[in-house]
Image 1 (tube, rainbow, N blue to C red):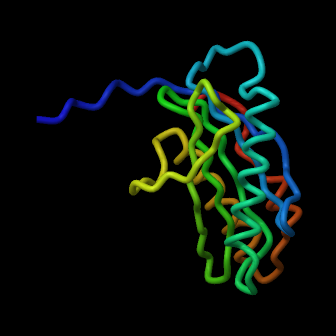
Image 2 (cartoon, one colour; image 1 turned 135 degrees about the vertical axis):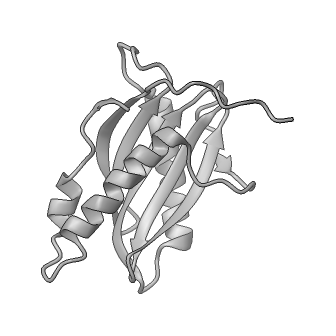
Length: 158
């Protein structure tokens, strides 16, 4: 018999930056398992490693004519690992994703996640916001990429 789910506890989520990598503008969010963390959510080493990993994925997989050159990224310091979800938009209102992870003790060592996975409940809060922002700003008669880039999930506990 499987274990019952653990009670939900909010985590700290905040927009961190916008990266311009491999002809893409990527909104970057951080999530930390400790909602009361006083310092930065991510170390400089983790940010640099996540950015390099995101650039490598975009260069390999997001350079075709269907890509809009826009996406978002979640760097999540979880209980088991640091998770990196890189999502980018293509024509047809489709979001593509690659997930990577790094050991908590080695935040610079991101490798692809090969088992089936989409996102955890905290990451889904960001994904839901990004879906709604895409509809508001890009799936209109006058798509506005800058308005989409400016539309971020506010920092808070989710």
